[in-house]
Length: 521
Image (cartoon, rainbow, N blue to C red; front, top):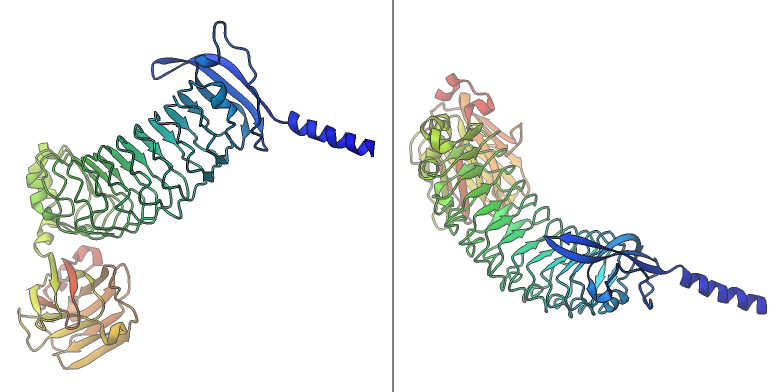
């Protein structure tokens, strides 16, 4: 029995001995300021928090009160022992990246009232108590990037009125943030929310961030930007939304961003830019829209163009552009337009070579003359007609079901005439109808129209063969060889059962391999 008790006592001592904490002291310079530093060595895999002292030999004439900087030098710990702030009450910079920390409690930094910077990058933190930073009102920098956080308490930053920069990158905020999380960060200038798995932008996140200069939200999972998404950010200069899944942007999404200078929206799924969406930007200088699906660029998307120096539209599918953009953008220096449909290239010093470059973009401008953006209503049963450029049109439509497209020689219904009905019979089939009477081709197309997204199609009529394709498809889902040969000079649009928004562009003959002879029908 005595032997067993002895083993138990030894095991307790062994457990205690496994925990150690000490400092190697030195001086260091950070941002041109000299600090007396503790380079912390710790072995605390079990989260022991009863340390009585941090062992180490001070430099001559120095004491614990002189330590203003602490960093992770060696070892790991699953918590931040309270002895750190207790022994070094004048710490200003806490640099604990890659420390193995899993939890922050009320006592982790409770004694560090003078702390200005806390770096916890690449730990394993999954839980932070509500009052973890309650006693740190002087913080200007917090980095919680590269951890395992799923949500944060709404009051976590309630005492951080002096905070200048907050980094929350590389976490998995699958529960998003509570609406008032940032409400007291009135002096925040930089907010980094990259790679956080955010699926939406809550307009209540930013209401009190009137001094925010830069907002980064790249590599999230955002699908759309809703109306007034950035309320409160009237002084924002830089917005980064690269590498999301954005498909839809509300026309008033950026209504609060009157001082924005730079916007990054690279590598999304944007196909349409609503009229006026960039109008609030009174001094925009850099617009990055590369790697999207944009087809038309209208002057009226923008507000003032006087400060625009760089426009990046590389790797889109642009087939039409408004020439006014390039006439009015007096400061435009770099225009990236590689791998588009109507033209392709890099245009350096645009302002110095304006006339030459405008000539190279002439096809884009000609196509824009045939671009139609319109809304049709169910209370108007009549077709609205537009010039029909051979060999066809690309159309994008947002509606619930049943859209009608007429092909005619004149700008009114006529015989002969062909009608294409997409999403007929409650969005279950599509039809080619001849002379408003006879259905000459019918195919099942269940759910072909989605009212929440732009639905893309291509209609061609070269060689008197009408072909209807889904956007991006190589083969048509509906076809008809004309019985009555006639030139298609006009097309008409209507939606007898619902409201629809349309964007129409001409098809590029070179893109689909149509010979010039076929363009005469």
